[in-house]
Image (cartoon, rainbow, N blue to C red):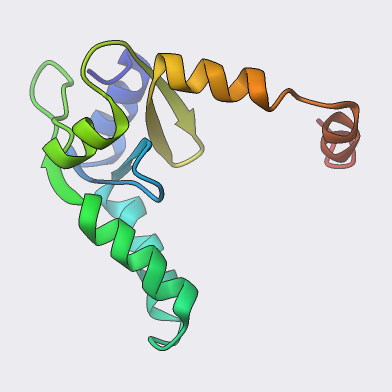
Length: 130
């Protein structure tokens, strides 16, 4: 189920259609269709023989599918992505600028613990005013 604030913005700005995919099979990305079309335009500008583009498209296509939000603000993730990412019980949902990320809570917390925010990270972010 989408967070209420995100659902409100979707209702105001988009038509409730999404493209759901993943770069790694561990974290689902829920893109409003209009935002996904911008990603597609950027991908189209990369030559087809570029190996990084091919790898990314393989993942986007394998895990991806279009979806629509229902009246309660729910979006069904593709079965293959739910299974691969372990998105069957306890998930976390985060806004990431123009799309949402959905991850298995235990895996997400384990990753944060394994990759703490360092003083070097904080300095790099401070250079951007954060």
